[in-house]
Image 1 (cartoon, rainbow, N blue to C red):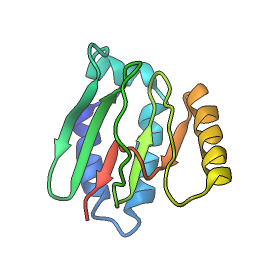
Image 2 (cartoon, rainbow, N blue to C red):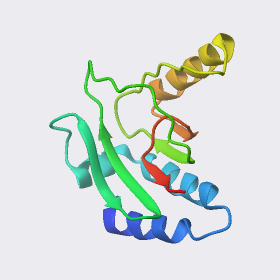
Image 3 (cartoon, rainbow, N blue to C red):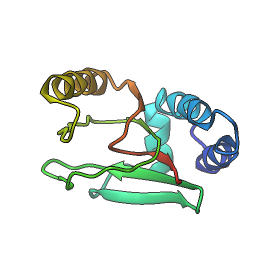
Image 4 (cartoon, rainbow, N blue to C red):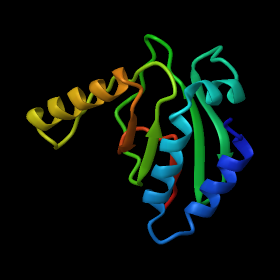
Length: 133
């Protein structure tokens, strides 16, 4: 069962560690391995949006509900992030200086993982958990 308060406490502790990104990645991977427990705890999605689960100067934890047709302007977080899907899928449009071939490869890999409800790992364009600089 997903315990929101325990997850927040674990993430708060994780960002104090030397390899915070790895510790948080492992926490998120464990959480999204049981998607029904996450939805049971957070409730079924009712409307699209970015909903704050926790916010401090060091850490932000979001529950993102992305509905069909939603879009956000191109942006750069300029921090490490970890994202895990517990339902649905994510489509991305890559822009910037990475080049067409790499953008296509990244997009294909994101689609492959999303189709299998797989853990994403580090991504620079979306966050479930983000450590602030």
